[in-house]
Amino acid sequence: MRRIGRLCVYCGSSGRVDERYRAAASELGMRLAESGIELVFGGGRVGLMGLVADAALAGGGRVTGVIPGALRDAELAHHGVSELVIVDTMHERKRVMAERADAFAVLPGGVGTLDETFETLTWRMLRLHDKRIFLVDVEGYWQPLLDLFDHVVAAHFAGPLIPNLVEPVPGVEALMDILSRPQRGNPAG
Image (cartoon, rainbow, N blue to C red):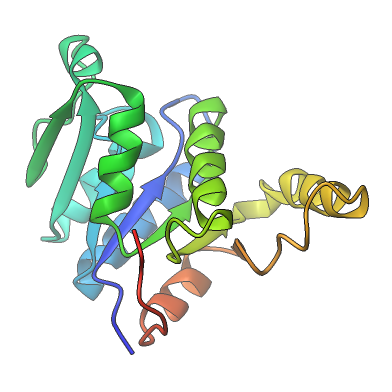
């Protein structure tokens, strides 16, 4: 049994989103800090990314951001984090985030969040890691994606994806309840 000490959070960089998503990001950052779980994230200061990092930092938590140099240079980097790792490419960003995490949580987000999520799911399907992946389904945001997974399985393009690869949770409280328990398994990646 091992404890999740570092959680990689994928989430949106848009600031023009429903207040419920913003509140969930802030709540997650605060709860991670309270639990002593390090936040690993995409390194941005904008949108939900910035909110989750700000809340974790305000709570005294450790926060590691991973950002490509081009985004840092566009003044999107969060310079208040505990550690800011600058990488060359988006692919390297995803790799470094995955290597530093014990598990993954996916808050609402857009195309970039989906990209990160699908690559992490693919790596898990290929047994490149066995780290848990949680879809934090704030206000049913991820229900269309869960329906798509069911469709993919029904059409026989994949075996059962849920709950074998990804675990939907209804919100931050449910996620934190799971993270507070010792975890089984030994991550390969």
